[in-house]
Length: 203
Image (cartoon, rainbow, N blue to C red; front, side, top):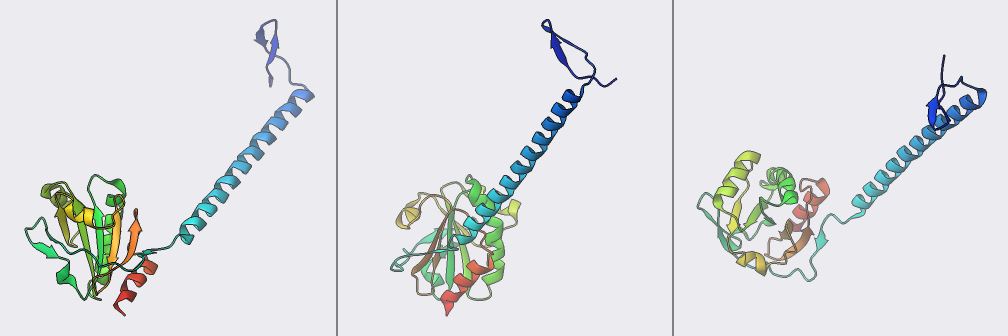
Protein backbone atom coordinates (compact mmCIF):
# COMPACT_ATOMS: atom_id res chain seq x y z
CA UNK A 1 0.00 0.00 0.00
CA UNK A 2 1.28 3.51 -0.90
CA UNK A 3 1.90 5.38 2.32
CA UNK A 4 2.19 9.03 3.32
CA UNK A 5 3.88 10.03 6.56
CA UNK A 6 1.84 11.26 9.48
CA UNK A 7 3.14 12.40 12.85
CA UNK A 8 1.18 11.09 15.86
CA UNK A 9 2.15 11.36 19.53
CA UNK A 10 5.67 12.49 18.75
CA UNK A 11 6.37 9.66 16.27
CA UNK A 12 5.89 9.03 12.55
CA UNK A 13 3.35 6.35 11.72
CA UNK A 14 2.09 4.80 8.49
CA UNK A 15 -1.21 6.18 7.23
CA UNK A 16 -3.20 5.24 4.10
CA UNK A 17 -2.94 7.80 1.29
CA UNK A 18 -5.88 10.18 1.13
CA UNK A 19 -7.04 12.47 -1.67
CA UNK A 20 -5.66 15.45 0.29
CA UNK A 21 -2.29 13.74 0.58
CA UNK A 22 -2.23 13.08 -3.15
CA UNK A 23 -3.16 16.71 -3.89
CA UNK A 24 -0.43 17.97 -1.52
CA UNK A 25 2.11 15.70 -3.18
CA UNK A 26 1.10 16.89 -6.65
CA UNK A 27 1.33 20.53 -5.57
CA UNK A 28 4.82 19.96 -4.17
CA UNK A 29 5.93 18.27 -7.38
CA UNK A 30 4.53 21.12 -9.50
CA UNK A 31 6.26 23.71 -7.32
CA UNK A 32 9.56 21.86 -7.61
CA UNK A 33 9.16 21.58 -11.40
CA UNK A 34 8.38 25.27 -11.93
CA UNK A 35 11.11 26.37 -9.53
CA UNK A 36 13.59 24.28 -11.53
CA UNK A 37 12.37 25.76 -14.81
CA UNK A 38 12.67 29.32 -13.49
CA UNK A 39 16.21 28.59 -12.29
CA UNK A 40 17.22 27.24 -15.72
CA UNK A 41 15.74 30.30 -17.48
CA UNK A 42 17.58 32.66 -15.10
CA UNK A 43 20.87 30.88 -15.75
CA UNK A 44 20.37 31.15 -19.54
CA UNK A 45 19.44 34.85 -19.32
CA UNK A 46 22.47 35.56 -17.10
CA UNK A 47 24.72 33.81 -19.63
CA UNK A 48 23.28 35.85 -22.51
CA UNK A 49 23.76 39.11 -20.59
CA UNK A 50 27.37 38.17 -19.72
CA UNK A 51 28.06 37.23 -23.33
CA UNK A 52 26.66 40.53 -24.56
CA UNK A 53 28.83 42.40 -22.06
CA UNK A 54 31.97 40.64 -23.25
CA UNK A 55 31.15 41.35 -26.91
CA UNK A 56 30.63 45.05 -26.15
CA UNK A 57 34.04 45.41 -24.50
CA UNK A 58 36.55 47.08 -26.81
CA UNK A 59 38.90 44.57 -28.38
CA UNK A 60 41.83 46.89 -27.63
CA UNK A 61 42.07 50.26 -25.90
CA UNK A 62 43.68 53.11 -27.83
CA UNK A 63 46.61 54.75 -26.05
CA UNK A 64 46.00 58.49 -25.83
CA UNK A 65 48.57 60.39 -27.82
CA UNK A 66 50.31 57.21 -29.01
CA UNK A 67 53.38 57.75 -26.77
CA UNK A 68 56.78 56.47 -27.91
CA UNK A 69 57.53 52.96 -26.69
CA UNK A 70 60.56 52.93 -24.33
CA UNK A 71 63.41 51.09 -25.98
CA UNK A 72 65.06 48.07 -24.37
CA UNK A 73 67.51 45.27 -25.00
CA UNK A 74 66.67 42.07 -23.13
CA UNK A 75 68.05 38.51 -23.21
CA UNK A 76 66.10 35.42 -24.09
CA UNK A 77 66.56 31.92 -22.63
CA UNK A 78 68.62 30.97 -25.70
CA UNK A 79 71.11 33.74 -24.89
CA UNK A 80 70.10 35.96 -27.81
CA UNK A 81 69.16 39.55 -27.07
CA UNK A 82 66.15 41.34 -28.54
CA UNK A 83 66.09 45.09 -29.10
CA UNK A 84 62.77 46.84 -29.56
CA UNK A 85 64.47 49.45 -31.74
CA UNK A 86 65.63 46.65 -34.01
CA UNK A 87 61.98 45.78 -34.70
CA UNK A 88 61.17 49.21 -36.15
CA UNK A 89 59.03 48.85 -39.26
CA UNK A 90 57.02 45.96 -37.80
CA UNK A 91 53.90 46.06 -35.67
CA UNK A 92 54.85 44.43 -32.36
CA UNK A 93 52.61 42.80 -29.76
CA UNK A 94 54.55 43.23 -26.50
CA UNK A 95 53.17 41.01 -23.75
CA UNK A 96 54.24 41.42 -20.09
CA UNK A 97 53.65 38.17 -18.22
CA UNK A 98 54.96 35.61 -15.71
CA UNK A 99 54.67 31.84 -15.40
CA UNK A 100 53.10 32.15 -11.92
CA UNK A 101 50.21 34.23 -13.33
CA UNK A 102 47.16 32.08 -14.30
CA UNK A 103 45.62 34.47 -16.87
CA UNK A 104 49.08 34.94 -18.39
CA UNK A 105 49.43 31.20 -18.87
CA UNK A 106 45.90 30.95 -20.26
CA UNK A 107 46.50 33.45 -23.08
CA UNK A 108 49.87 32.05 -24.19
CA UNK A 109 48.44 29.51 -26.67
CA UNK A 110 46.45 32.30 -28.38
CA UNK A 111 49.63 34.42 -28.60
CA UNK A 112 51.31 31.50 -30.32
CA UNK A 113 48.46 31.30 -32.82
CA UNK A 114 48.63 35.08 -33.33
CA UNK A 115 52.38 34.79 -33.97
CA UNK A 116 51.76 32.14 -36.61
CA UNK A 117 49.10 34.33 -38.24
CA UNK A 118 51.05 37.61 -38.45
CA UNK A 119 54.76 36.82 -38.58
CA UNK A 120 54.79 36.66 -42.39
CA UNK A 121 52.67 39.82 -42.70
CA UNK A 122 54.90 42.33 -40.92
CA UNK A 123 53.76 41.43 -37.40
CA UNK A 124 55.81 40.32 -34.40
CA UNK A 125 55.01 38.86 -30.99
CA UNK A 126 57.38 39.46 -28.07
CA UNK A 127 56.66 38.27 -24.54
CA UNK A 128 58.57 39.86 -21.65
CA UNK A 129 58.76 37.61 -18.60
CA UNK A 130 58.81 39.77 -15.48
CA UNK A 131 61.32 38.39 -12.96
CA UNK A 132 61.70 34.64 -12.57
CA UNK A 133 64.49 32.54 -14.03
CA UNK A 134 65.47 31.39 -17.50
CA UNK A 135 64.69 27.83 -16.40
CA UNK A 136 61.10 28.91 -15.65
CA UNK A 137 60.80 30.20 -19.22
CA UNK A 138 62.42 27.12 -20.81
CA UNK A 139 60.18 24.73 -18.89
CA UNK A 140 57.04 26.68 -19.76
CA UNK A 141 57.77 27.15 -23.47
CA UNK A 142 58.65 23.48 -23.83
CA UNK A 143 55.47 22.38 -22.11
CA UNK A 144 53.23 24.66 -24.19
CA UNK A 145 55.10 24.37 -27.50
CA UNK A 146 55.75 28.12 -27.84
CA UNK A 147 58.24 29.35 -30.42
CA UNK A 148 57.63 33.11 -30.52
CA UNK A 149 60.36 35.27 -28.93
CA UNK A 150 60.36 35.49 -25.13
CA UNK A 151 62.80 37.62 -23.14
CA UNK A 152 63.36 38.18 -19.42
CA UNK A 153 63.16 41.42 -17.46
CA UNK A 154 65.01 40.20 -14.37
CA UNK A 155 64.82 43.35 -12.25
CA UNK A 156 61.57 44.75 -13.72
CA UNK A 157 63.44 47.87 -14.88
CA UNK A 158 61.91 47.72 -18.36
CA UNK A 159 58.46 46.88 -17.00
CA UNK A 160 58.56 49.93 -14.71
CA UNK A 161 59.11 52.23 -17.73
CA UNK A 162 56.10 50.90 -19.63
CA UNK A 163 52.39 51.57 -18.85
CA UNK A 164 51.92 48.15 -17.28
CA UNK A 165 49.00 47.72 -14.88
CA UNK A 166 49.26 44.21 -13.49
CA UNK A 167 49.94 41.01 -15.37
CA UNK A 168 49.22 40.30 -18.08
CA UNK A 169 49.39 43.68 -19.78
CA UNK A 170 49.90 43.78 -23.53
CA UNK A 171 50.92 46.79 -25.62
CA UNK A 172 50.79 47.00 -29.39
CA UNK A 173 53.62 49.07 -30.89
CA UNK A 174 53.18 50.51 -34.37
CA UNK A 175 55.91 50.44 -37.08
CA UNK A 176 57.09 53.92 -36.02
CA UNK A 177 57.75 52.75 -32.47
CA UNK A 178 54.69 54.31 -30.81
CA UNK A 179 52.30 52.54 -28.43
CA UNK A 180 49.00 52.33 -30.28
CA UNK A 181 46.95 49.97 -28.09
CA UNK A 182 46.92 48.53 -24.59
CA UNK A 183 45.10 45.50 -23.20
CA UNK A 184 45.02 44.92 -19.46
CA UNK A 185 44.20 41.33 -18.56
CA UNK A 186 43.98 38.22 -20.69
CA UNK A 187 42.75 38.17 -24.29
CA UNK A 188 42.30 35.70 -27.11
CA UNK A 189 45.00 37.16 -29.32
CA UNK A 190 44.10 35.18 -32.41
CA UNK A 191 40.63 36.76 -32.45
CA UNK A 192 40.14 38.04 -36.04
CA UNK A 193 39.02 41.51 -34.91
CA UNK A 194 42.13 41.94 -32.74
CA UNK A 195 44.48 40.73 -35.44
CA UNK A 196 42.86 43.06 -37.97
CA UNK A 197 43.34 46.03 -35.59
CA UNK A 198 46.99 45.02 -35.17
CA UNK A 199 47.76 44.55 -38.87
CA UNK A 200 45.87 47.70 -39.86
CA UNK A 201 48.68 49.66 -38.16
CA UNK A 202 50.91 48.65 -41.07
CA UNK A 203 48.78 50.69 -43.49
